[in-house]
Image (cartoon, rainbow, N blue to C red; front, side, top):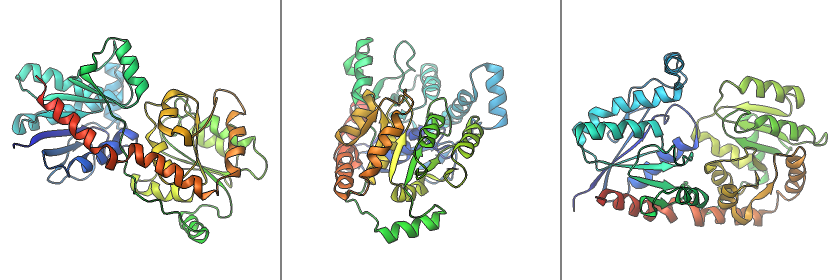
Length: 375
């Protein structure tokens, strides 16, 4: 049986830390173990090897991308995607893939038009994690919807069921949770330069106020008592980050607050030493960091909306984060029970059974084979 030739493409991989990028890397590694596919990963940064190709592009944070984004009124992210997609075209001609799997809408649009021009036959499989909905969907042949609410909205707006598959994001999760002992946690905290013998609340995401609402989180923690927990924010810094840093230092002080940007493989250590995880955004396409935090047994605090309910299930902690004081009140309740190890194991098992690659890989394989065979 001839193998299905699959390209997985992501312009930000190797350049920026987001859910799209970490999912793309893990998906490539998981699918590479399948015997029926010949899979190549194309990324915007990092090292190349035989099956991982780094393509030239204008990164969204570069001066040129920012300037061209202003001139075209499309933004720097559009410039990154477009330049990345153009670099991909010679590989399409030489290798003739069957399926191209992507999460960046502009990349898909370029590849759609290129296919019309060249009469190539590859299929475009779009992982709709943002998500996009009609009438503003990128060009695609098949949609992967990552949450039931996204699927329902698309159906309600006329997208045929046959052109969609509901499969949530997979995440790399060990089959068994191994909690650190008290002494191991304290030693790791000291190694990371974090305070010992204090509760730590962790949030992972872009350091901004527009979407991740780190400013709301800081203000809520500030209202807690003098024995308030230490707040650690991990994520990509951007234009709003200096304002977040200033607010945290002003309201909490440098002894109670810190912002860091670390490599993706280093984030695990921070999950291991934290006591609770918070994402203050009012909406997420999926919120893959919830899965990561739960896989380490952490209690997760979230705004109450459909996707968060789907991802966190019965083990999540929910409140209306549009209201001042709501997150602070929820934090009081959660931090009292953080040392209940039985709940840590329940959280881990909840996400492992629903979202681990061990459980989802067959569904991804079936989806790719279905798309490859579509007329």
